[in-house]
Length: 375
Ligand code: SF4
Ligand code: SF4
Image (cartoon, rainbow, N blue to C red; front, side):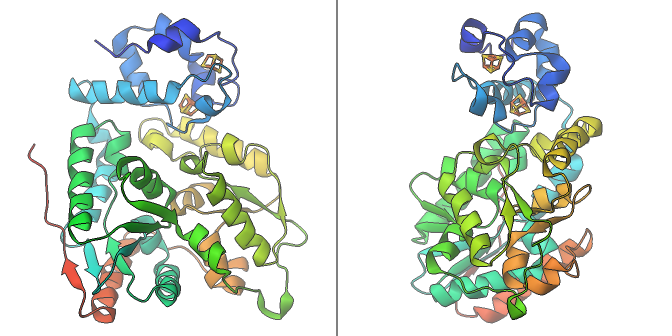
């Protein structure tokens, strides 16, 4: 029996405020219509078409939370073997590699209480940017550690709750046992996982850290590459409620003297880039509908974002920059000469980064992760 979201059944007025901007609800109806009209088996399968982006929660005048209801359905489907997870083998395999002994790398220098956690996609697609960022952060905090591992958000979002809790719990247990109290993150998805499931740690984005420190980054000769067609900022869904992070990103862009315009559906009301909830693995058309909405909102303006995953997805239809590329390699990034790597090169980059870390921090406490939960 599927979990029935009683508050949605009681309080949803079918006002449509969540439905109009949502590619998924436009197809199937308001949350109340979905939960009343469909049988449980259909509800289970539909929940995997929701991007889990949280826009519905952000716009609902009744303060309802459909996204939690769809995630609960996914968990229920997994627990009752009502979903074929083999269709997600690409993303789950990617996650598994990230947590493996081969790709993971914990390097904690003497006295270290803070780590930089770059996630999986940034180091793979942008190894030079990742290293430049780590170097800069180390300049601010010389005993900074670094951890290459996967936060296992794909499993979390696919409803594999027990696996996720076990994997993430083991990671946090290791960090705490080694006196790590603070985590600096570049990836919005990792940030969301740490801030939600590691509440006793101090969790910050590198954008807040760099903005606080006043990073000196200017385009050469005072050039202003986006003066004629200003940038628009795409806020990744996990950052929807993170006002400080949103402002730090905009402040960094202003510090670079870059022209930025407002865009429809930003900040709290931001849109899914198309990658959310792994929807593209079962319905590429629905995922493309989200990307198309963002393309329309951006119009002729290039996009700047702070998620390597969003940058990859949005760049399929609209020129999209990662703010970290612009910060560390301004002229090359702005002119389009700094291209993010694609698989399988991304895996080689991650292994090379691991070698570089070992060389740069020879005296650090080092671990490769070798943990798998019991089935
Ligand atoms: S979480 Fe996003 S995709 Fe899912 S119902 Fe809400 S707005 Fe639509
Ligand atoms: S915005 Fe809230 S009340 Fe309106 S249809 Fe969506 S869930 Fe129902």
